[in-house]
Structure formats: structure tokens, C-alpha cells
Image 1 (tube, helix red, strand yellow):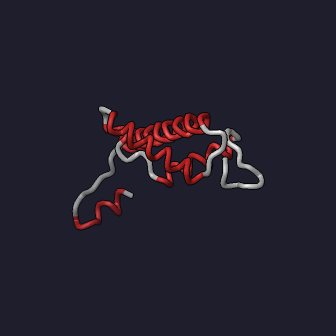
Image 2 (cartoon, helix red, strand yellow):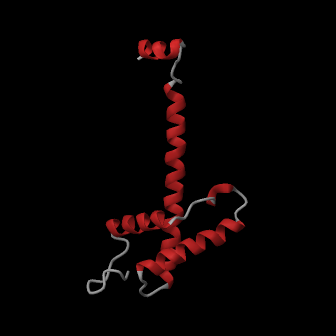
Image 3 (spheres, helix red, strand yellow):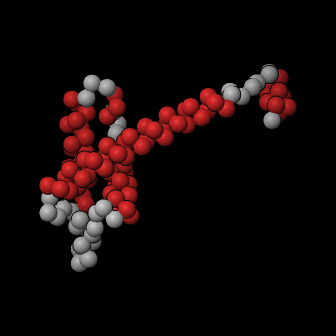
Length: 110
């Protein structure tokens, strides 16, 4: 690897130590885990309030709750936290874990 790096543009290049990469990966993983936990908590709160809810309505309510909490958040943690893909991913996660169930006759209802 070092020989290849030395040949690029005649300049001597080197990789950052592995610990630098690991720290970044750990921070990214930690941030993603916090994001998932936050969205799952919102999902649980909304699902506890509703007897049954359409998946589309649930996604809308979670995104709306994210935006409301984002404006009250002093840190940038809630910056771009809630996209529909993030929320749907968390719904699928909860479905796979067995925390949420679909209705057999109407699978779009939880």
C-alpha cells in the first residue's frame, strides 16, 4: 500500500492511523444508534396513544413530532433526524422485533 501511495503524483502520501478511522466510525455508529432510539421512542409514544393507525399517518405524525422537538432543541442533535425513510426503517425494525404488529386483514394498519 505504501508503495502505491508513494507513486501518486510523485508525492509522498500516508494514511491516517487506524485509531482515527475507528473514532470516526464509532461516532457515526453512536449517532445513528441515538437517531434510531429517538425515532423508536416517538413511534412508541404515538402507538400507545392510538388504538390502530395507518402506516402513512404514523410516519407523518413522527416527522411532525421530530420537527416540533427540533425547534425546542438547543443542540443540533435533531437537525435532519426525521426523513420518511428513517421512520419507515424504524417501523420495520419494530415489526421485526415483534414490538408492533400488523392487522392481518389490513396490513397497512398497525
